[in-house]
Length: 150
Image 1 (tube, rainbow, N blue to C red):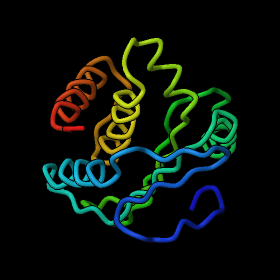
Image 2: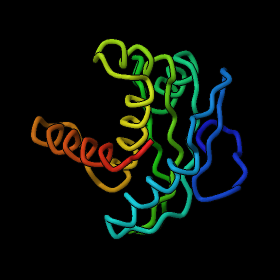
Image 3: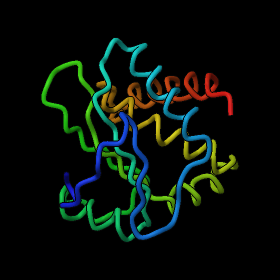
Image 4: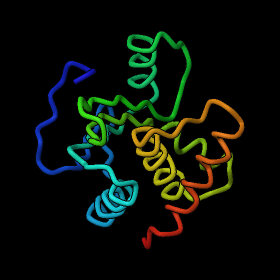
């Protein structure tokens, strides 16, 4: 575990928080949606831990582990040791998601779900460094968001 904390395995997709009190709504639907996204890509879900936190917590992880002194909305740590298996810790700043939702003129839940599935697509091998990759990533996110009936 990157942060030095151990998050107990309760199911294949777990939700935790650090430095704030937050849990997403519709957990069962979100878990099913994420699992179906992974299965559609012919990958096996081992475990994903979503850790919702504040800017300060995620900034510290960004500095300490990635040597980036910037704020970000998400950091994904791929913990899988076997090709085709998904095992990860995904840290999401609720403060960044809130601000981004306001900036983009979308609902908080929509932006949260977009960021959550964005991390999954990184685990599935999709990048977002080039303009073409960013376009593909956004299309994948949009397609998945349309499938989420919440």
